[in-house]
Image (cartoon, rainbow, N blue to C red; front, side):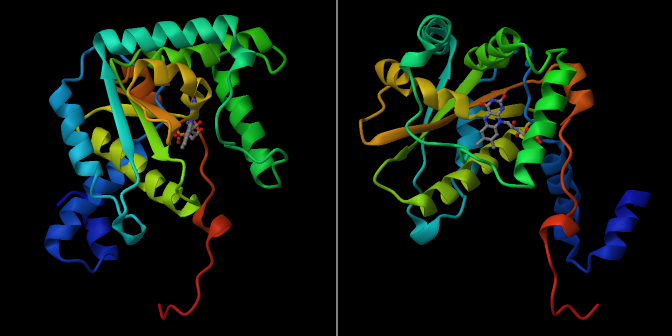
Length: 247
Ligand SMILES: Cc1cc2nc3c(=O)[nH]c(=O)nc-3n(C[C@H](O)[C@H](O)[C@H](O)COP(=O)(O)O)c2cc1C
């Protein structure tokens, strides 16, 4: 047993079989990051199908399973990239997401975290806070799926309520973890929701479905894998309180 395994064994009074999975699951969850640089290595259709086949085991209130997915690659993905990049270049103001992702005025501590994200993210790319053109160029990379050879467009029935969006989030996380288990990385992207009208022209999305996000999936560039997530995560004490435990 490695020292890491011994450490885990000492802290987890679990059945042997669960202990084996524990290390893998923790590693994959912690190893996931919003990947924004992929190699062109193809991801076979079967791998995407396998990922979705695992992700569908996500829980959902009353088991209604509110997720819908349009998986794209090759010529269809290229068509989407061309249309969205053109719109982003020429007609950005004419498009809007059908839902609001962020509160208009973020309270603390979220506002500070978002500022920190902006500093770290654009700082690592050498883009100044004030460089709006540079930021727009970076945003445009979203619509190229950051170079990933496969992507998912995720939708939800607009007649459903906020609880179903919780379910959808669990499904999306499952997709990303299942991708991680296959040596792939991913990036969830709400930016795709802005161009839902164009996506409707290119994919068979019925009017009662709302485009929630895209997910780029592929093999991360080596340097990106080495760096992993650049984003700091608040410690457990900052968001959780414990009560009633005996140890
Ligand atoms: C639902 C959702 C939508 C997101 N949309 C985008 C996006 O449109 N473009 C992007 O570059 N990153 C997007 N992200 C990635 C976040 O910026 C990233 O998850 C966050 O900064 C934390 O970094 P990490 O995922 O590497 O831990 C999104 C994340 C989530 C969960």
